[in-house]
Image (cartoon, rainbow, N blue to C red):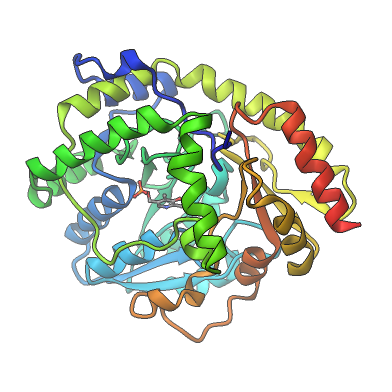
Length: 398
Ligand SMILES: *Cc1c(COP(=O)(O)O)cnc(C)c1O
């Protein structure tokens, strides 16, 4: 038995039957979102948003992102020929430091990308304020936050554009997919135009994704995950490669193509189960956070006022790297869904050397990478197993 590190919505056999593809309509209806645009991954959705932004402001070329985020974001920015500006976080927080953000934004800034990690709604208002001063676009990275709410409405709408990921393990999945959302009708038309212009049909690539989705449907369950996830995890950790263990080792090119109708149909049926699944995840997280936070030396990153997370996992912040590593030594290979988010702050990945500017120290992002671990919020992690995790952490810190 292997608990997945994030709470993905499991697929059912019936989901695989061919049907009308109404994926974007169903998700928009379920989460009260405006009309959505489907792309082949969250990263591809970001690329389309950046290309649309470039149409508006051809002279601008810099993209500001948090120093602690998915390496794919850095690869995407680089693949389009833009340059990355990395913003440190506030201390012990997932939000970009508001002061640093203002300093990074200039007449060169194409877009600022506030990011909702772990389904927790981050501070978009500061990004909007910094961007507005220079005329940059705000693109919310809600890849991990489909279903999260900011002041009663879905994340992704407070900035100019938001994108969500439908990748394996990120909530609702069609193996790989991404959604673009905007409340601005003119921008929505520009995003559609950018997609028509830049996104090709690739039949063989789509066929491969169909087979991968069948594999996901078959193996995304406690036994199958031991094979599909646990084996590779343990092998990577044995050879001392944490980057591979969490899947942070991404290829240098971003596949861009259209999503076929069969995969859209699979997601359509699964989308009907999304609202109840999200309810259950939030209830489970709210129940478990006090238990964890009662352990001396443990802090759990939580919802900011007037927001609701989508809770794919809990992010646990410990006093220092030694305590974190002591806890992980007991839990990472336990099959209980304990893991790490991104291994490094962006400037510390050797393989991203040509995507990320070096030099800036990014102390708070680095501290977060060193001191956090994640606990799956999958329903397959039952109370007894969750209790085991708590007591292992307690012993590791004692
Ligand atoms: C996964 C992820 C992405 C990219 O989404 P894909 O669908 O995997 O391409 C972007 N940003 C963050 C924060 C992510 O976690």
